[in-house]
Structures are given as C-alpha cells and as structure tokens.
Image (cartoon, rainbow, N blue to C red; front, side, top):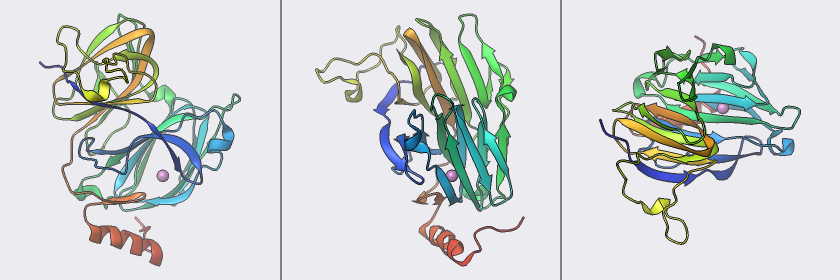
Length: 300
Ligand code: CO
C-alpha cells in the first residue's frame, strides 16, 4: 500500500458567476485532465448578502452533473421539469443534467447573513451525455455520519466509507464525496480509491496531507516566499493527489475539515462552453443550436 503524494496545492481564486455572485473557484474552465472526471469546483461561502443575492437565474446545462452541498443558508431551486425545492444546511443536490435542463439556483443567507456551500461539476461519459435528466435531493438527516475512536467524523454523501454507503446513487464516475472533520493534532490514513483521481478541498482548520514516516519530495508549489516548505494547508486550499493507494492526513492544533472527493477518470475529449460540456465541437454547436430553436429540452 502506498501513500498518495500531494501533486499540487492551489488557493481558490475569486470569480464572478451567475447574475453576479462573488465566489472562489478552486478549478474549472481549464485543462481538466488532472481532475477528470471533475470539471469545476466552486466555493460559494460568503457573509455579504449583496455578494450572492443575485443568484444563478435560469440557465441551461447539458452533458454534466452538478453537485451542490449547502453548509449554511438556503438555496432555492427550480427547473424545466417542474422540480422545485429548498436546500438547507447539510443538504445535497446531485443533478444529472444529461441531455438538457434549464434551472435556477437562488441563495439566501441565514440570520447572520451567511451563505455557505460548494458546487462541484462532474463530467458524464459520451454514453450518458444525452441521458434523461435526474435530480437527487438529499436532506441532511439522510446522510450517514461515521465517527472514529479518535473523534474523526465523516459524512458520507456519495460512495462507501467504513461500511456506510452515501445516499446518492447511479452516478457514472463512481465518485466518493466525503465531508471529513479530523480533531486537533490527530493523524489518519484513509484507504483511497486506487484507480481514481482524488482531491481535497480544505474549508476549516489546517493540517497536512503527508505521511510523517515517508517524507515526500518538496514541490515548488509548496514553498513559501522565503523558500521554506509550507507545512500546513489551510482554508480554501485545493489539494490534488498523485496516484497511490491511501490518503494520509494530520490535523493541526485547530483541527482540520475538508471535502475528500474521488472519481474514476473518463478519459474522453472535452468540448466545453459555459454550462454545456460535450465531447466534440460539433456536439457543442448542436447544443447551442438546440437552445436557439427551442429543442434543447426534450420531453421524456
Ligand atoms: Co446550474
């Protein structure tokens, strides 16, 4: 069994999406080979209602899945299939856009003005790009939580972990989507998905992802300005792992909370424009032509 080395650490960067929502993007709209099957990860945690009130009004998607995980505040959603609902703290929505949907996602902060959550885009293989659209709305209480002897808590949103299976199913890339909280100063080794791409996104506390007994080579991305190795990884850091078996984690004195996400690479060409991701330019042009002539939404 090998520990996955850290390949890359990047800070999420400010971006503006929807009708003017200020968020941070950890990756997206670039070369997606390193994160395949995942295309984009947005962190929309914000405490200023004026930064997110405009929301994400009606827009189309085709060829992908979007995964929305809310931590605070609510997101009201509606779509062209007649689905409607509100995601609250701890809830998840896993949307398979397939051949096409129109939807809107409108965030509202809680009493403290907080709107906290994340959105992940997962690609669909060519065989499923034109599948029927599907929503899986999962309320917080249906997400299993496992607690280890050392106090580590893992919410299992998708995939299997320590014998618990997440409620989301039927997803192409066999993804695992875990919300992991490690108590202060604890170390953990988690069995990884060997043939998957794996990333972590840190959103509370700080820590490292290396095995103390097996030091990893120092990479330039991990060097601070004075050339010293940066040992701790904190809020809004995306950590991309190299191939291997296990993921090793050490929490700092404030504890460490992060999403741990893995999926099997699809390995197909990506043709991407805005909210539509296909395999070829031709399919992309077809999608935009369908939008224009009103045939984008097909009755089931
Ligand atoms: Co959307």
